[in-house]
Length: 237
Length: 338
Image 1 (tube, chains in turn red, purple):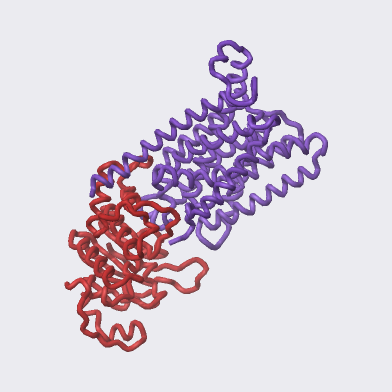
Image 2: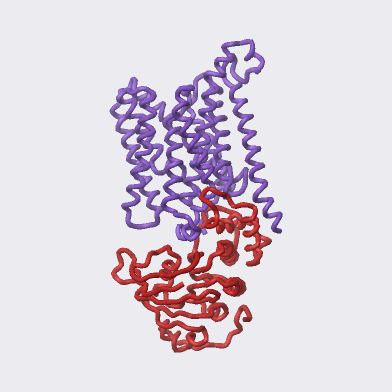
């Protein structure tokens, strides 16, 4: 997936949310977008998913995209298995219902993220972390070439962050290209291969996590002094 | 773990739907035998062979009326469930988007100018769809909020607009002839239902319910976030329009036939979730069947319980509001958002 000189401006706004943005997301790799609130991370994800249309520039992508927005409204108490089987929609004809095979895939995806025992639970009864896992399971059954996640570790406890990091890692290891936005540096260190730093809609720097994630770069990015402490990474990678 | 999940999902829903369908058949047969001829209560089916008058009452009065009630309930239930999904809001029904009020205005206008029953049906149906079109067109001009909020806001305004017009017509109508006629029609009822009136409304209602049932899973998918639904290959704008038009056409047809019958579309989907379980593909067909059962029973009560006929809209509202309150108190309606 390749962003080439992409710009985007929201209706009624004078400043562009994303300006001259270039990025290559590779299959089998996890790329983390870092930047302050309002720096254009979510807009980049929306454009990558095809949900927003780039004002100028182009996005090249080979294959389908699964997109997990930051939050999702839960107006109805679907069971986890029902909810995950919605992920089969791109593979089904317009009026078809998910078949037994689709339901099996949904069960397998739930099991893969450790939510197998809760397949018949209602999504409204889940904790935030469990819901995030179920959403990732739904993205799994989409069998998309690319998965875009907007702040997947937001508001989760460290154990769930670790589980989600592991789920994302195994996705990438199976060949899926992952692009995610996050403010969570520990999560980034555990899950990401590449890091892209964004400020005011522009790409500041991009490269392997080890070389980009420096104290100086982070200090400049967030405008507050940083020093990297050596903390055990949650996934133990 | 995989087989049990699959069984629970794929097997139990059709079984409970089949049971509900069987119950609908039983309730409809009972409704045919219930009424005030020759005496209040149920008639013995055996007298149908001896009493030609009883046979005529059942075949020419109660049968079309029961079919009308069945279609009315099925259309209101299915469209209520579909609209709740489309608006991602468990507290809306087909009355949103101005469909019911548009139909009311069309019917009142037709009664004011003195058209026949076909003109009344056409006018009610036409204005119901016009109200839907106005709601959608207005929503497109609102420049804030998501698509769903815009539709709800413009639907509220269009509903209020048409109810003001209905009030205006009632104010100007002849208080001795037209006003009672309009008022009685607005209360909703199937007393005017005959085989002839069914031939117009039934095909539209049947088509609407069938299409909504066919669309049930896609409709449930639309209740997810717009961005999420789009990422799942849906075209939310187009698919929402298809579901809303289908639902509104069914509601317009049965409202044109029977007047405004409230509360069915709102509470029946909740009853369906409660009784039949599940929320995905079983809610729309379940609501169609339970809606039909509910209205057939209410109509039988309306025409058979008292010497004078009680308007159906009053019966459904009285029972519906009590059930609604019960569901709220027992926390069977969950409006908390994630």
